[in-house]
Image 1 (tube, rainbow, N blue to C red):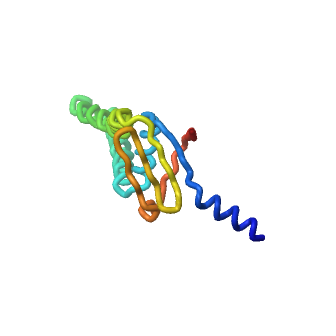
Image 2 (image 1 turned 90 degrees about the vertical axis):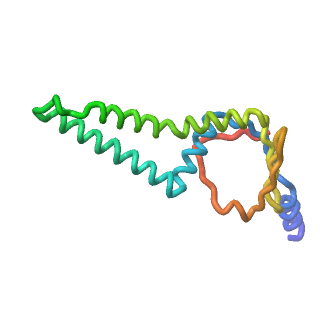
Image 3 (image 1 turned 90 degrees about the horizontal axis):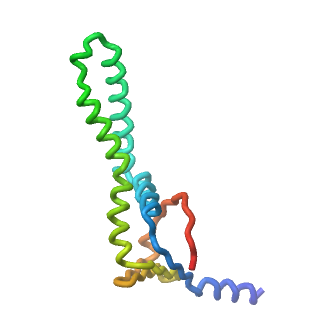
Length: 145
């Protein structure tokens, strides 16, 4: 019985080490997961859905009406461009973040009882475990070195 407890304590004290190089796709997934978990992100998503829905209904009603000369087609085109831009925002942000992350090289993380230590070629940071109150899951795989 004592032998089992010693093994548990030894495993708990041994840190877990990971090495990772982020890609644009990984950053897009992370930004989208973050948007789903925040109020501002959910609001932006609902606003985008309502904008597309109102524009679609307006365009259908305008096309079906008899006064096609009065149809505000430039407005509908602007709404389509807006919707495409808002959909592409996480990808555009991820490209910018990836440029910064590329300069840092591999990210090495060590997780133990005291917290999380992240180290790159040019910087390091230590986070207390209590700061990570929740996490967002993304549909991707990670490679452990």
